[in-house]
Length: 139
Picture 1 (cartoon, rainbow, N blue to C red):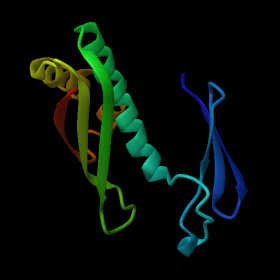
Picture 2 (picture 1 turned 30 degrees about the horizontal axis):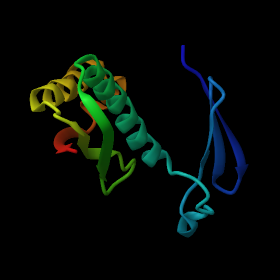
Picture 3 (picture 1 turned 180 degrees about the vertical axis):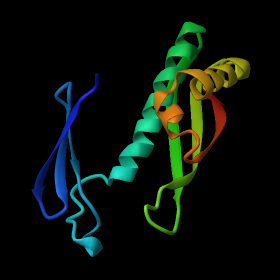
């Protein structure tokens, strides 16, 4: 079972600590009472999605012997106007850099992540529409 602990510091600032001992500051905008000292919870959700899918894609491409030199993932989330202001649409763009990268390998790696492996994406399924795209940069 995964575990996390979130501790209030002051104002709207918290420190979240994972069960593996890693910590991150969470805060809000100054216009709503925060001090802008950390990431917003919804930003963390997007980062979690990008990190989860990125790990899948990297793993699959490495197993396919692709000579990747970089993977950049841009994740954008559109939120509802009314509370609880959940994400309604999320776009994920994968930018894969490397030498002689196979488009088929990239497409398959991303599809496997989105359809089978990424637990964060599976958790968000049915809540937000999740779209993905990719670019390959041969260097």
